[in-house]
Amino acid sequence: MKSFIAPIIALSLLSAETNAHASEQVRINRAGSQPSISGAETNFTGSVRVDGLFKGEAPARISGGTVTFEPGARTAWHTHPLGQTLIVTAGVGYVQQESGERQEIRSGDVVWIPPHVRHWHGATASSGMTHIAVSEAEDGTTVTWAEKVSDTVYSGARP
Image (cartoon, rainbow, N blue to C red; front, side, top):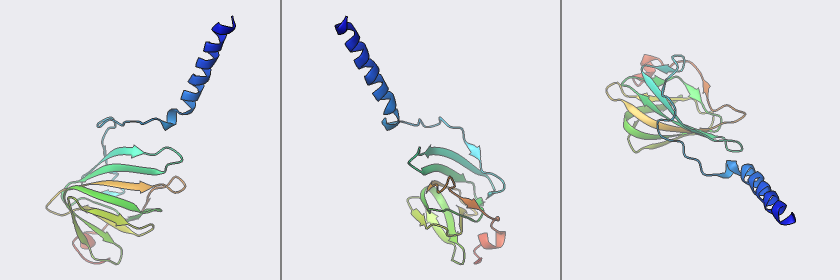
């Protein structure tokens, strides 16, 4: 009887150990497994599509998504508590920090926006732009939104 019970106990312990380490397994988020959403009208001007790519599970706090801006579309002013990285994957766009010059960004460019720097980004008036946006959450927050960017600022005037 002992020889029959020992393997069952061993399998139970192995199963418990496997379940305890399930979060340590490599996971693949399949392309297209999450639906696209339109950028919220309160946070964007123009036609914007957001595709969530990933969100880290605690203790990780990183998340990322692909954002596609049609010509003339842009974010509202906003900040990120731990900064943001933009990886431009297609098209031509702009990024501007408050009190700074509007800067052109192109496919292949990587943009770093430091923590708490008020800024906006989006497409040019004649070309769409797509970027992957990566940021980290602090106390559950990755972004603080503010007012929309005026047409005057979008056109190149300093805020």
